[in-house]
Amino acid sequence: EAGVTQFPSHSVIEKGQTVTLRCDPISGHDNLYWYRRVMGKEIKFLLHFVKESKQDESGMPNNRFLAERTGGTYSTLKVQPAELEDSGVYFCASSRQGFANSPLHFGNGTRLTVT
Amino acid sequence: AQSVTQLDSQVPVFEEAPVELRCNYSSSVSVYLFWYVQYPNQGLQLLLKYLSGSTLVKGINGFEAEFNKSQTSFHLRKPSVHISDTAEYFCAVLNEKLTFGTGTRLTIIP
View (cartoon, rainbow over the protein chains, first blue to last red):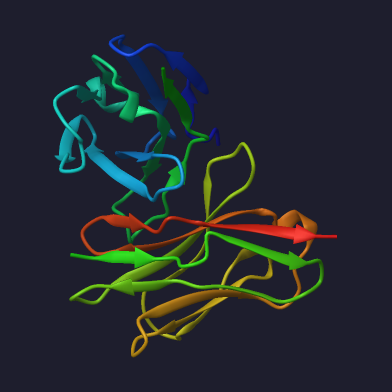
């Protein structure tokens, strides 16, 4: 089966611009997660979708971040306007069931650089 | 609240030598524990997990980890490393959500 795919793999934008990251989960995976790793730090949870519904968005840093999953398939994460501290690698993961019952499959990540 | 500590940010090891990557966690309730690996230019991949049962867990690529409740540790070990083990390794704990450590970069010296 195809894995989790993320687009773009890299993005360099200026402070104040808008960027949209996309994640295509594995087909049939209802659970979709977004994580972020700022350089040298831990991988931090952003949010969790079950189908099209936001199950947990407690990790979203602020209202400049907007995640959507229309139709319960692919998801987008928009940052508007981007700030320097938003730089990092954004990972998407999907699973058939919840965390403990089925493994998370991660995409290769999108490396975002805000200058 | 739960947290994960990986004290070693980088670990250099000679090829065919043993390695131990340390992980300590804190949680007020029972947890599930995981090790993930990220090879260069790839996503994270599950190495192994502890949910319950035997405290010694075997994973892929010859890695194993031991859950020690009294020491709140879940150290990752491999008896003989290979060049292909060069990667970054992340310990994670699951309670309500998956919480990762800061990662340990394993470098294999030929």
